[in-house]
Amino acid sequence: MDSNAMKLFLAQQKEAQQQQFNFFKEQQEQLLQTMLAALNTQKSEATAIINSLNSRIPTFTYAPEDGETFDKWFRRHEDTIKLDGADLDDTAKARFILTKLDKREAEQFRNHILPKSPADVNFEDTIQMLKKLFNETKSLTRLRYELLSVKFDGYDRKEYTGLVKSRFSAAQWTKMTEDQAQCLLCIIGLQSSEHLDLRLRALRELEINPSVTLSELADRLDQVIALRNDAHFIGASSTVVHAVTNSSKRHHRHNNVFHQESAMAPPSSFLYTVNSIIFNHLIITSMSKMLPHTWASKM
Image (cartoon, rainbow, N blue to C red; front, side):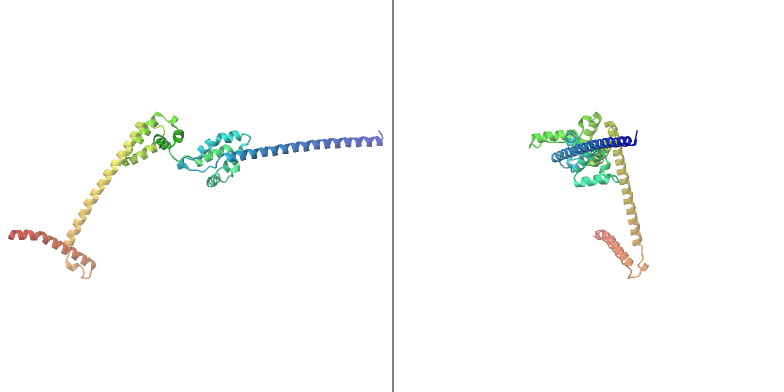
């Protein structure tokens, strides 16, 4: 092959390689544009979903006395978040949950997870932490007592029905064992103010050991009563001893004062003045007791 033919062959090869390079470049640009378009579409859809959820789900504000806990709030809106937000990834769901916290609750959560940031906590951990932070402060026994004490005010039957169902669910009534029911009825019967320490001990026992039986609870309350009686007995004994000791001291001081001589302190002494007053009082008292008897004997 001569030099001209070689040059022509190389030029053709170079042109073919350039065409192939241009083709691959166009394919990559088209793929990139398709991916960007898909991402923009997905982002737009995610934004639309979040906006839709945001308009339907209220802000969470922790109010334990009113029964407004995070667990109750999340159960109320869980289906909406998981079903209508099914196209959202867990990161987006976690961000959405945090945007629905009130100012104080959001600040408390951020402080709780330090040194991490909210972006470092996944969706499931976020839910569990919020349930722990903003949980029910009432004991299970109290919730069950509130269920038993619910009353109809005669105003709204449907509202009353909903209240019964709500308290029934919060009290976990279907999970209550026979022993727990007996212990609950026993505690409810301790209504007197004198039974305050027994109620406290019984509630504590149920919280520490939910499987305690009524017989075991009664034995522990008997221990409380025995200790209380011992405390009263020891306190009463100390009072008697203290009273006897004080009486002895007063009698001893009385004898000392009665036998003091006026020369023990100068007339200007405060102690001499006090002793003189006491001494004079004793003399007058003694004479007042003797005079009627003298008069009676003379008569």
